[in-house]
Length: 162
Image (cartoon, rainbow, N blue to C red; front, side):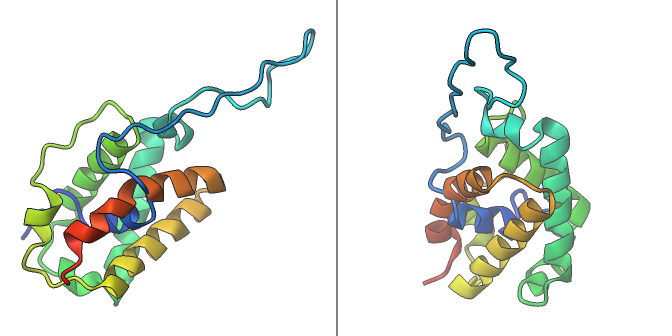
């Protein structure tokens, strides 16, 4: 079985994002609460990693995306010989690192992993769609969905065969 370091899913996520692994994400800074008010409900100055739920949230996203990819006839043939548990683990590390988390992805680069697969734009878009559905199902804020996708978007040029 092939154990992909960063699956097509992660690459697809990159399509909707504007950065790449390790890119820094601007933090959202909340206005200070008015004097005497409680900061409860105020947006906190947190990383995208934290806003996605930290390690548990990233694991859930990777798990959901892996399951969707495995069930998606548009892309699942690429994963026929893939150890999906290993893929899910690599995907979580990749997404976590991309979002500013502590785990580091040490697998092969995306270009090498996808070089001979012949992935098309529609297939890349399918993975991004799958990721978007997972993020929506997890009720991730629209700005954070866009932030993750923006960070992953540059992967299109590396993954898609033109």
